Image (cartoon, rainbow, N blue to C red; front, side, top):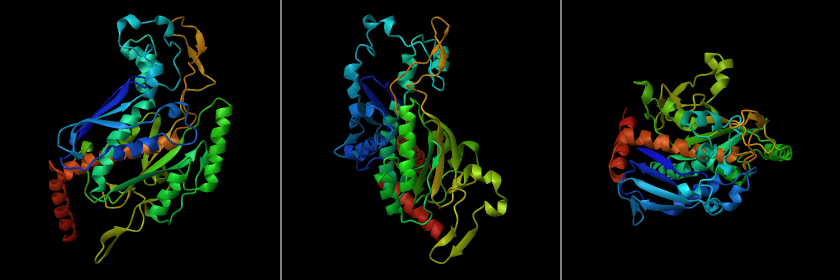
Length: 386
């Protein structure tokens, strides 16, 4: 299974093509649009979210509400395109060097990619490097989420920290209640006290023309033991998940389970002891490993956290250099969010869903959903009889 996306932030549309989805998966636009809408939410989002209403259109691979085994193509229209037709035109006669952006932003792809591709207008870079592209990725992830739900795998996310404000994450809480708290929160945190402080921090940053980053966690429940493998570096499940999450714009670190906290603990307080009970099988009472050991899922929830840096588009620009004059200048002040950590958490769900769907395909195969389900049931029986 793989997917590719195409499209620019202010282009006509975003397109995603995903291949490897088995035939027979019941699918509707609402299955995708639900997550596209969640991606647009969150306190601290910019004016762009008031313009766009992301909805998907299937243009290939789906017939009469079912996947048919061929590549699935989905298109998301950019409503803001109407305001950018001339600036983003594909026609040579519309070229105008007066609209070129020539002041790269520190922390963005602007300068490095301009040098790499030999582009003198930074808009050629920033339009594709923009996190607007993640709408297409969320569409791909939502499709994979629908596939995984048929195997009783469910994914959710929450925000741990924004701008130095850390949430107190409840240890014992019913999953449904946890999910409800998160979805009701403007910053996707289950801690009401931290929620208010996070929103205050975002408001203060906006007043100063600044931006904030933070930390979010993505959890996959119901993942069976045995996805991924210890046998080769590129078959390790945590390696694949880490790559998928690190590819999200502005993500600078990924950690499983206790993550960097392992560095301050002895082994006796780090590893998850193993138990066995009739009718339950092997299990653990802790999940410090985050559900993956030796590159393989161990049957516990997969728990992975990401740190997101502050967005590099500031209303109060940082120091830069003009590409034309080579003189010191201020970076471009481009319209953006103040904080996108809650939205990034939803994108993280999509990235995790895709990587788990890939692992499911490798483990259980099947050109149709029916065939994959049959293989899955046989595998679960094999584990029970171990």
